[in-house]
Amino acid sequence: MGLPFESGRATDWVAVSYLGLIQLALPYVFLTYAIPRLRALEVSLFLLVEPVLNPIWAWLVHGESPSGWALVGGALILGTTVTRTVLERRQSVTSSPGQSENSAPAGSPSP
Image (tube, rainbow, N blue to C red; front, side, top):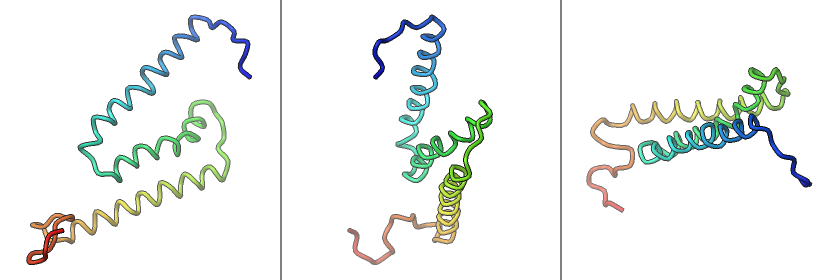
C-alpha cells in the first residue's frame, strides 16, 4: 500500500532521524538503566503513562480535541494506578520498620 515510495526532503529525514534517535531511543536507554532500580509497578507506570497521555499531548500541541471516551479511559488508568500506589505506600508504612514487605515473620519457615 505504501508503494511507490517518494523521495524525502532533507527536512523529512532530519525529522525522522530525530524521532528515531532522540524521542524514541533516548527514553528507552533511561528506562533500561532504571529497571533494575525500580519496582515492577513503577516501571509499568512509566510504560503505561505514555499512551495514556498521547491524547493530551495531541490536544496541547496540535489542538486536537480528545474524545470523551479517551479522557475517561485515561482518567481510569491513571486513577487506578494512583490509588494502588497510595494504598501500597500506606501498607508499607504500617508494616513494622524492621521487617521488609517480602520477608517472612520471625519463627516461620522460609520458602
